[in-house]
Length: 394
Image 1 (spheres, rainbow, N blue to C red):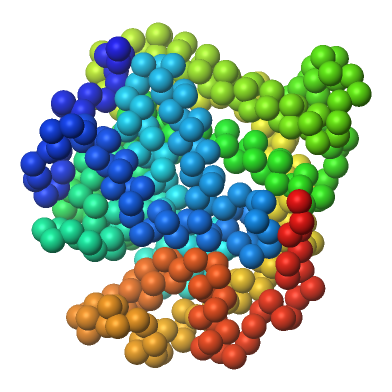
Image 2 (image 1 turned 120 degrees about the vertical axis):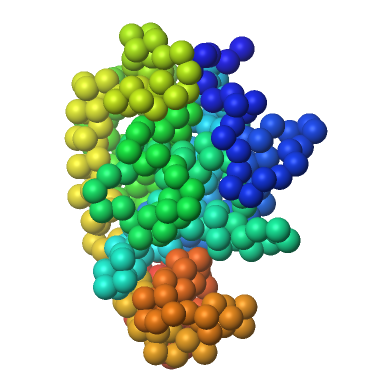
């Protein structure tokens, strides 16, 4: 039984291009399935989460991260009586717009695109699912429902001020009501993202030996998790001990979000999904105390993992890859694949060409970007650094 504030697929605002709906799948199920079968979703397999794709088979990629986010989101959504299918669709699609090399690649591409409207991975996800996936006979994109598009666009909250170029272009023809909050399902997907990476970045950092288990055991939340494991399993094997502690950490975050969301929804007492959107605040969030503890953990990860010397070296190298590829394609668009040349021929000026180049580079996987860079420049960045292949062991 869904709560009254859940998104009911029978009340969907529909698709930009009307279609006959499936006889055996709800509109949100269909959205989820189209996202899973999208080319951009498959390419997440070889896109950076923290470590560059080639650096080891055991680290998370954008694809495994998205799957973990969807799992957390389904769990929370089900407990709250929300529509798990819409929640899963938004969770699976939330990182489709990431370029190669994670946030490093996004920062580089945004800097290069500043004269042409900038680059934002959330806006790029909308561009992918509404335009760049070109497989269907009757429309470009995946023709997702309004609710799924809304969730992708504003799962982190209302989009105000300077709206990213790609998103502004789309909402000019299909209003996603950017000034309001998203559905409760999309809000769950946003918090599930925070939970997933807060958990798995600790796990990957330990595997990479960027910090020790003892250091983690001194941090907020984790201190109690390790203490509970040690009390229940004295003398437990090192690897099992840290896994059990991180399991408990994961559970603490999920239970905290569920508790806050229940309390907020009970207090606001929304009677529909629209009332959630118009509540003026996020219904799904962490308690202030836990959020304060998480900020301490994130500061630790920032200094010890995201800015670790090994990671910084690779950040500098891959930033150079993006900075080399963009002007090269701008000056020589004939180097783009054949299927992109029609768009280039129809481009109405430098800004339109820059958007095409950004679309192409953003769609690259880590390995393809490195291969294209080596092919077009004759420079292999992996031969210039001592960290190639680092952390590849278990």
